[in-house]
Image (cartoon, rainbow, N blue to C red; front, side, top):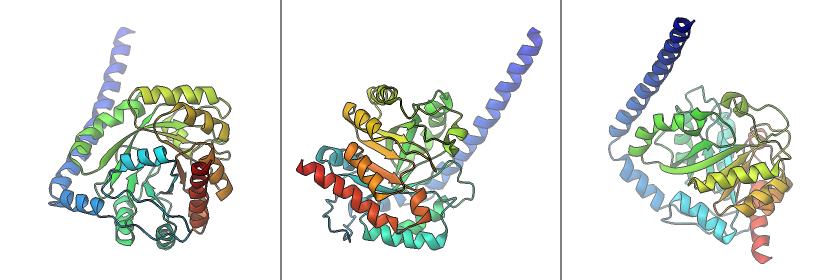
Length: 319
């Protein structure tokens, strides 16, 4: 019996070694690609430091944080209650025809950031997607990676996600160890982010892929304690996500409670289908509103969503 257990343990260790070796080889290739990219870092810094403001169609003046890094733009927005609106683009799902329309509307609507990524990203479209955005506009691009392979130095920053709502060690720290050498030498701004899955009423891709249970929709107190623990661990952003295609978005009561207990910016996404819900979530205390699925289906929602989020911020300044 002992020999059987030892053999099984040996096989498991060998499997882990093969997976880690494969990922390290991939990271090494990315590192060499980065080193061969020449003056990209200088180019990146120049682009980041010379962004110009896009005129807004929605009649709200947007304060642009020139020469300010991404994290401090989030932090300053929270301090001044200037709500941020993010369009989430999944390279697996977006059609190039839709992409052109999304980029045009995003520029006109003064979208603050693009989050780029998904749970899979299986069609090698990540770099192509980033290049398309960079050619079309100057909206900052932040990677929202579903795994350690979704990395690219063409973006401006990366949400370095730690899945603190689950108990999967790989997504708490394991994958981070693998990607750390690449990120250390990349021009990406690293944004340490606590990622909290909230039950959206239906099983989602991210809950399946992460093999974790989301926080129940009605357990506001658990969400608050989880978020505060993440902040105490030193995470700089908190992201509550009901998941792509969620039936029920994160509740306003949960957002209000969690936001009131945090000093760091709060991002909320998943299941937001209407400008009214985007407005309600921002007013409840979300500093950043993220919308993806609804915009994939109807890109024209971008302007209405952006207007709703900014309007919530303006009203909160008044009151």
